[in-house]
Image (cartoon, rainbow, N blue to C red; front, top):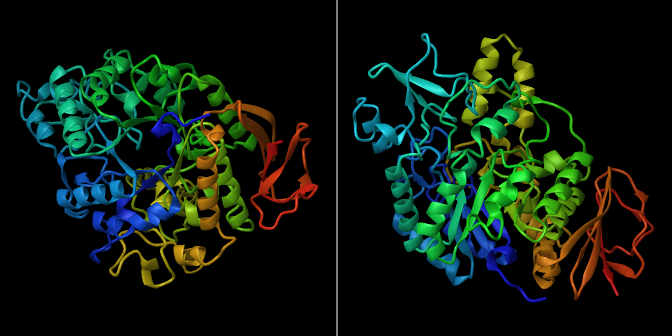
Length: 549
């Protein structure tokens, strides 16, 4: 089987710019810092860099509140820096995709500054404005980050909608002028040579315009049934794809809050002409209770296995997803899905084997390739993320114990994934010569790139091995997926096409266990453990791959 589509063949690497590498000593990662590491990225073997927002922004939500879509924030550099990064990546046959954040803008964007001035301002209907009800907001919708989704403006005696922070007013895609503006933004970046977009919260762009109160008590259900998959979402996506994106050889990845298997193909079906793939979030929302991430509930490995199986079955050969286990919005995958204490190296290897052998485009988050872990802050004041800070404030106001709040935010907060990249064991982990914008994980002295480079059996070398292995065997891109066994702690499946067939077995447990029965005709190929001799027992956190002879 020959390779067919570049964005299916690709391995994506996500860079969170503030935390990747600081080139000028101000403590904030920047584009020139990324330029310094392009050879590191090339050596890793990745094909696409997903660059988080570097646009002009007040940084209320670390760049996801954009005040100018065509300018680079001075903290990150200049447009010339971005052009150079793009050029250097392309020389190494690495593509660059950027975040497209068009469900909302910053409240400091010129559009919103005009919109808030008066009821008859030409920009008024760039956003959603409504009268309150009996001195209260227009409805009972809640923000993703706590509190009401409506903010009151006294000058015009109306509320504006913000599904995220108060400084992120939602754009009104019902207005065709807004859609024209979005198309112009997309065209600006594609003409500059960008290779596509990761589309932030794209299923939220179409609102249910009756704005009825929701009777649902579970916030995840509100997201799925009220905020996402609105009546015109496919019309709007199809419009921007048809008018602009389809004219370029680029990739589109939709972030998928509220997208479930029953509607997945509506976004990525081969007959739809919409997105290339989605980041579905079913497995990432596991453990989120009715009130969200800081209302944790138990989940099991069986839930994880079931979600992977269900999504592969839903997509089959008609759609496409990305395979990932963490990003900037969730905790570190090694701390959440692995064992970051006793089997850090072993479980990190298992998790990348999983990502590289499931059907879909793999996405690696910066630092996973060296086994970075969650951090444990000692004070509530140490947290930076707006969602965490809002939760801390509201929880304190309700009288909850600070120690309980600290434990919850340390375990589930987004800052876990945003601590700076750990390059070496020097001061500030080689990330900056100044004071880092966010506290660096103290374990950087033993967990860093230089340490991992020097360990032939370490995590970094195994990542390179698995990336190369996937590329050498197109069956892991285009082949059929069949689950053979899924019961905690064992997950076993086959990947097959008309030329090759593999069986992959994972032991997600801390103990040696009996090897499940492998289908006849398959022989041992390799293990995530070094110097493995195809033992009869699966070691703790071992992945083993078999090939059909």
